[in-house]
Length: 355
Image (cartoon, rainbow, N blue to C red; front, side, top):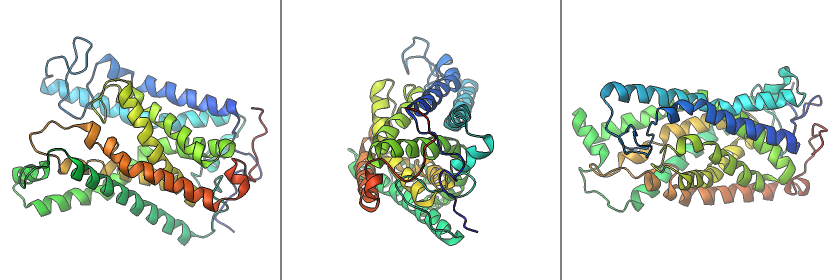
């Protein structure tokens, strides 16, 4: 028996009407704001610098919190962040159930139980080894992208520190271990971090790659799925980004930067899902990217305030890697897909809903 199932399975198809897509997007965005409400009520500064309690309503304007306050804020922020990562998965389950999909079919349609055929990528190759090979290649590619981003940021850092003045040197010295050993230990943690981060990441991937990208691809083609899906994915981060997360920006500029970055990164994860047909591949890749995001910190000048806009794994310098990557993947999919798939259509059935 083949290990591959059709995207619609001959029984129920993924609902791709405008109504279904709109419901999913609205639910995902709304739930993200709901679960992060404690961060806003407590006015927790999420910027990649020292946190501050804001008693005037302006980010970073309040007094430094005590150790107990810092612990509470950190705990609340982490809990809200993890809960937020499950909101796309919750939103897509609700969307599919409201659209008439039986609960027993929800996770198979999203590629969570066995590989499926994804719009724009053609039928999957049956068998375990091709799947494992694609999984390993996806993880290696994601790690390579993370390291390349770190390299670009390191080269582009305006004030390149002399030896002995990076955070890596400082941390190794504080621990009393050689720099090489410290770096080995940091990189050795990435695989474990990838597995740990993949657990909440699958909550995101079920919604973004399991549903939104295939649905948008069926309606508009892979290119517009990457652009529209990436913009929505970036906008979904707004409750955290507007409190300083990632970039230390407290307004729409940070959200705009996240939207553009998510287009490139989303193209990679969507490609991995299409090539494998399993949601677990982009989930592990997502977890790996998150685990490797701190690499850029290692080579930041010690004693210099961290600038997330230029040095974050999704900051402006990351776009040097992510945007060309997104363009290359879109070109590759367009080149190897059929004429019908290029126009946004394919041989997969829709749910029969009206637009």
